[in-house]
Image 1 (cartoon, rainbow, N blue to C red):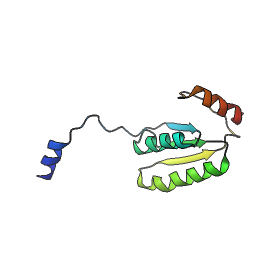
Image 2 (cartoon, one colour):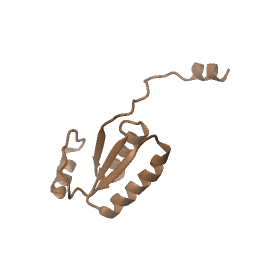
Image 3 (spheres, rainbow, N blue to C red):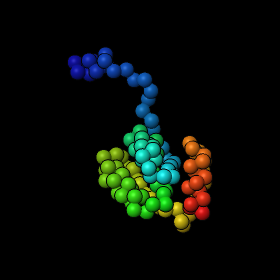
Length: 107
């Protein structure tokens, strides 16, 4: 009876997003960047997220917060770096000016 009531009340609008096998890099761990990371992780768009920012203290704190919270998600890996030791490839940027600013800082 409970499942019949649930089916009567709730309708599937879109199928659940499948687990992505790709790695997502988010540049900037401000409010918008962290909201994007949380959405990516909770909707299971990617199971491997990398954070990049020039402020090392804030970056480490946000990474630890996400790692502690990711225990409730399935197979989610969170990494972070200041970007000094690797190069980034931008495939998609939402705010081109901001990504240029971060790219100059990382160089």
